[in-house]
Amino acid sequence: MNRTVYDYQRGNFDALRSSLESENLSNLISAEGDIDHDWLIWKSTFLTIVADHIPTKRLRSRKYVPWLTEKISIKTSVNNVREYAENPRDIATLFNCYFVSIFSSDPINIVNQQSISETTDTLFNDIVLSQGTVRSVLRNLDNNKAHGPDEIPARLLTETAYQIAPSLCLLFNKSLKSGIVPREWKLANVVPIHKKGDKDHAENYRPISLLSLVSKVLERCVFISIKEHAFSQINSCQHGFISGKSCVTQLIEVLDTIGSQ
Image (cartoon, rainbow, N blue to C red; front, side, top):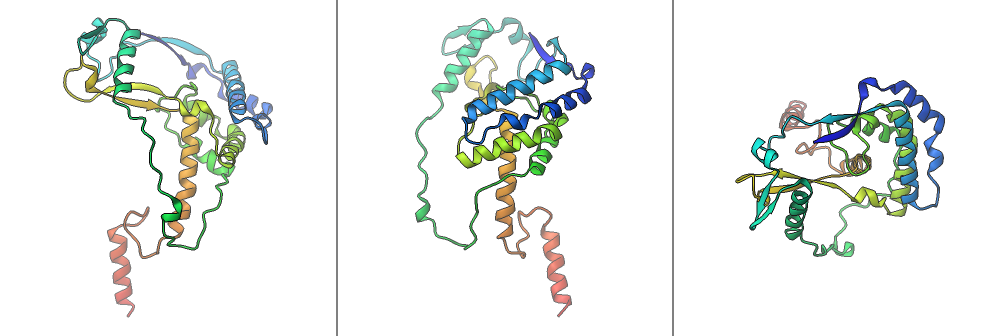
């Protein structure tokens, strides 16, 4: 199987960063316009600039993934309820039919907020992200993570974090303010991962959804904001499930309190 990947060793990241700074992607994010349009223009511009400085190459995959045996890869076949698939497209269709059959689309009952008793007078206002937070999350992305349908790898995001953080911050805040996320961020590349049993049967696989990494950056930024607010409401005596605290820190505090009496 052949696939196209970026050839980072032959790429010029300094020139890429310089071009992104000159382009000023923040100008592509409108104040009130359609967020899908803003995202698609941003992505197209970003990838066009990337193509000018980072070449691509064709790879022929020879290393089999752990859940794909050499026998299956040669036969390219999967059996499921007496259906037999012999080529990659038919195999993908078979997996898709099986995953759809086990997916439940029933609406989730959301608890009425009025029925939840208030335990604090502190309100959590609208989230407004900072460029620093967005930049930090971008720089800490795992470069080994697979990208989603937008085809923007983590390496490109981490290498250009300082240049793209301002524009993405504008896009993220616009999304949070409007309550709308770009449609492409709701799409995913679904990859079947073998669980157990016969590897020739589709029902022995589970689907893994690979989302846009840019959407994952927004998710992480929102999590950081919620975490900071929630932890600010927790009593300082709470040591369980708190970052930087443990049973040891609790015992030290207790002993210190006893010793000071």
